[in-house]
Length: 138
Image (cartoon, rainbow, N blue to C red):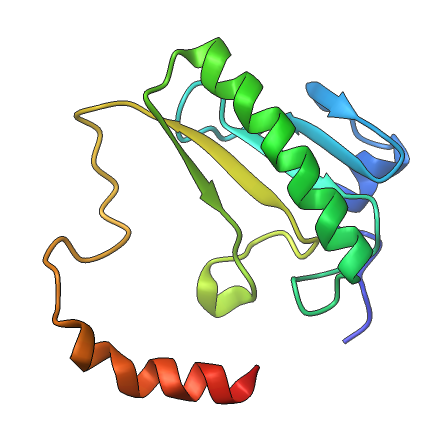
């Protein structure tokens, strides 16, 4: 499916819709999420037209992560958060709702539990079959 230039993030990148910008360079932009999960919830986008991680060029992915790292440090300092959650969703089934690749930087405080994964540890041996399939796909 071709990239949809009418999505809200494409409109923000073009300057058609305002945002509360945190950072911008020639390849990326970071701004506050208007529906924050926590104070300081920030979105980082590459300026490249890419719906998801599979459409993003290696150069775009590198620029995205460099900006995420830079902005995440600032978010952590500014919010005094003891932790940060980085989230990147690919496809509707994964929860992606805006189809321009982006990374969420979400400050995390003690006592606020989102439970994105299981709490109990499983034996490493039980993980090996899927690990082998993933290695084979690389």
